[in-house]
Image 1 (cartoon, one colour):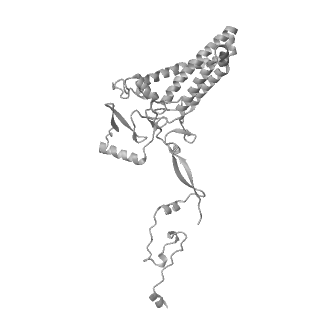
Image 2 (cartoon, one colour):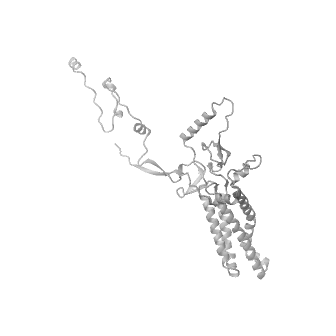
Image 3 (cartoon, one colour):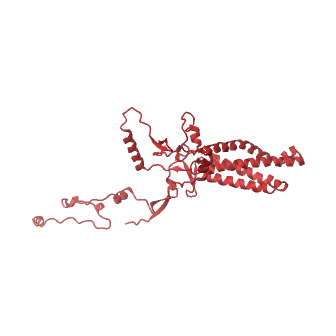
Length: 364
């Protein structure tokens, strides 16, 4: 009998999670698969700030104040911290239903809708939910096999349902939802301040240098400054405009997805049930409210057994899993006895029954 060494391999749950996400650091970092524009964001911020600290900050610290590079460094570090926190965190992904749960939900839907005649379209799968004396519809997700919570939506890029889904931002390489929206807002706010700060002091730097050597000579000697001014000029309008738009949404306790769909405006004329009617209360709830924990359990352990020498064959697996019923031998002859395959391993095969004594005497 060959002895097989069996060892256990620890598998984390993030390795089996559906959806189109990438994980790093053993599931601690979660991002979308499309990360090219995120790398561009990092390159623009790091490149512009590196040029600013290397050239303009030293001159301005001597000519004006040493507080200029200190404040710029604080803005830079805060922007990078909020960017990485937004990009590397779980935005609020809702786990998909297990097969048993999905089957149970399907049974509930069929029982509620009844038998649909052939050729007719089945009714929409919607549940009504009341929030602040107002009816909100919960839609069924055919991919995740769940009824989505209020304000949740399915991201087509990450292929996940996200709680309080705002939008998918390629610039941060992740969805923006309930668990990382405040960090996203703080990122675009600090980036707007950083862009204005760098742009303004680049202009000051060019002005101070122009007083000594002239404007054209300054541009020839400082091509990095010209590049910084161009990057900040074209970035300023989009970043500041985006910050203003999200400030408006935070004040109304509304998401980008709801604003695009016109959920609480336009033809629907339905009042937003999530708004408290007070700007400060809405801002405190969105930006300062308790942060819910992740429900994915990405680093949960799924123990699996692997064979150290060779994987068990199908025959060995079936024989060890399926119960073996004893074979009756009282009506079988010596030629019809079961083979050694049905005997326990390590036991000698049963001997055939001896012929009756009468038959033996007759043969003699």
